[in-house]
Length: 132
Image 1 (spheres, helix red, strand yellow):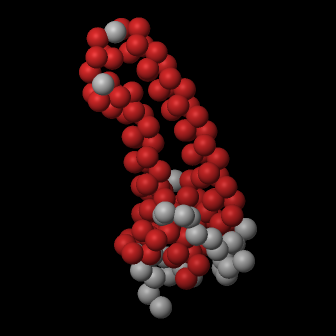
Image 2 (cartoon, one colour):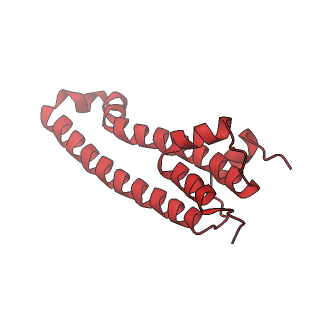
């Protein structure tokens, strides 16, 4: 359990996971009442939002990437339609998984937990070191 500060600070840090542009606002224009806990979460939420957005864009483009990588597949209309149907299903599954993950991070931040996100926290620490 970390020191989440006031409810307003916790709410701002938690909402940054769900809407990462809010994290950008707090990151570049830090509120005076920000704690070390909230600064860490804002930095982590900002990087998480960008990584999640890029990963989802790649998932959306996956059918096109497959068609470019395997040109004979593009010659068959039926294969292209099925590939895009599978891509749509993958997009829906990815959106549900991403929403669940995002809401779990938000809930943990609302509780005042201090946690690391594998693959995201090391990038956030490198890009935006917390001043001590």
